[in-house]
Image 1 (spheres, rainbow over the protein chains, first blue to last red):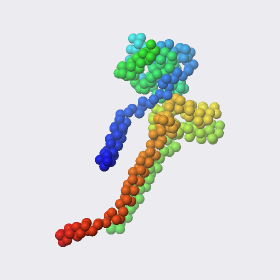
Image 2 (cartoon, chains in turn brown, purple):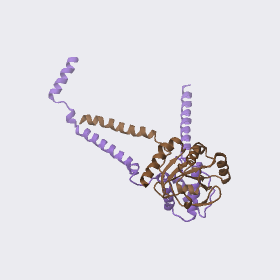
Image 3 (tube, rainbow over the protein chains, first blue to last red):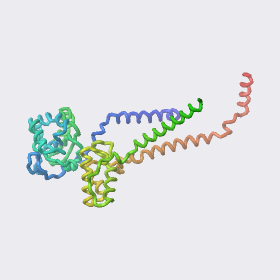
Image 4 (cartoon, rainbow over the protein chains, first blue to last red):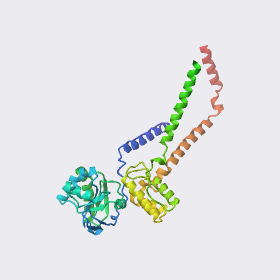
Length: 177
Length: 168
C-alpha cells in the first residue's frame, strides 16, 4: 500500500510526460475539417476562364479539389504532382482559385501549366469560407457522390500523395464496389 | 556617503518597478492591435456586436490571434462576413453557428460543451478536487497524531534519560 502511494505520483508524472512529449510533435496546423462526410457546398460562380460553373460541372467520379492562388509559393511546389496526376489520368483535379485575381490566375496557369479540369474563381474568398478554407494550398478528396471525404492542408507532394491520398482513395473505392 | 548610496539604490528600485509595470501594461491585450475597421454600421450597437464577435472568434490561419487582431486573408474575409450578417439582421448565436459549421470548435475562443471538450472545461475543476482530496487526507492524518502520541511513555523517557546521561 505504501509502495503504491510512492509510485502513484511517479506514474502520474510518466503519463503526463508522455502526453506532453507527444504534444510537442503534433502539428497545430492540421485542424479537423468540419466538412468531412458532408456534401460539397453548392456554388454558382464563374471559372478562371470565364465560364459559368456549378456543382453540376463537377466530375462524376472521385476527384481532388485543390485550393490555389498565383501568389501562393507552396502551390508551385505541389504543382508538378498535380500535373503528373492529371497527365497520367489518375484522378481529375478541380481548382479553387482562392483570393486571387483572374488575370494573374490566367497568367500563372499559362506560365506553369494547367492541371485543372476547371478552376472556380473565388476572388472574394466567399466560397472558401463555405469550404472552411484558411489558406492555399489545401486539397480535398471528393467522392463520386460529391461528398468531401478527406482534406490535406499545405503542400501535396509525391510523399503525401503516396502516404495519405492513395490509401484514402483505395478505401473509397473498396467502399464503392 | 552611505546614505547617498541607499538613496540611489531606492531610486534604482523605483525605476526597475516602474519599468516592470510598463512592460506588463504593454503586454496586456490592447485594442490598438486590432485591424482598422472600414465597415459602416447603422447603429453603435451593431458596431459593438461586430467588435465583440471579432474578438471572440479566432483567426483560423494565424491561430493565436482573434479575427479582430489578425491581418490574415481569411480573417479579413470572415470580418466582412460578420459585418454582412449583422447588417442582414442575424443574431450573434446565428453568426457563431455559421462560423462553427465551417471552421469547427477551433474558431471559438470559448469552445462548446461537448463530449470532446468536457475535459477542457472541467479539467481544472477536476484537478482542484484531486488536490482538495489530497490536502484533506494530509490534514486528517495530521490531526490524528495527537499530543499524547507525541509524548514519550515511561520506558521511553527512561531510555532517553539514559542516553542523554551517557553523553554528558
